Structures are given as C-alpha cells and as structure tokens.
Image (cartoon, rainbow, N blue to C red):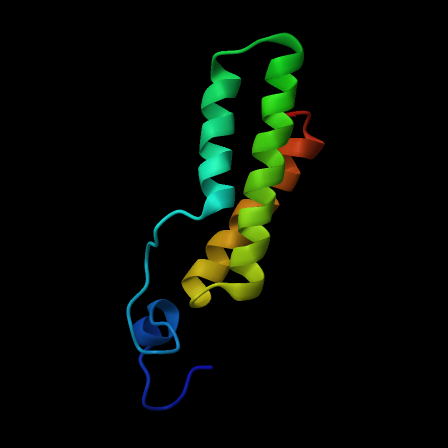
Length: 95
C-alpha cells in the first residue's frame, strides 16, 4: 500500500523487506516455458501442438504465481499482462 513516506518508485519496485526487485532468477515454470517454446520452434505436427500446450500451461502457471505471490506490484502487473496475453493468444487460435 502506498503510504505518505513512500515514493511511487519505492511502492512499485521494492519488496516487503525494502529490496528493489525488478528481475529474479527464473523459477521452474518459466524455465519450462522457455524450453517448450524453443522445442515448439523446431518441431511440427503433434509434437508442435504438444509443446505449444506445454508452453501455455507453464507460462500460465508462472503468470498466476506472479499475480498471487509477486514480490511487488511491478511483478504482479507483469503476471497480469502475461496472463491476459496468453488468454488472448489461446482465444485467437495460437495454440
């Protein structure tokens, strides 16, 4: 919550302990999404669709975790934007 003694930048980028958090070491769902998208680029047919679904599921999980447990509002916003983009991609036939 933005308080009187806190700047917008402090609110947006600092975590609960006061550390600035813009990027973090990738967690398992994000690593899996990156591997799946790379494998999707080099496969066709059923494997291509499988890796697309795996990418979607892994990135959806990462986005959800950022929304519900992100270190700061910046991370939660990244999760929200990613989730909206994924849903748009799925609805538009990207899978």
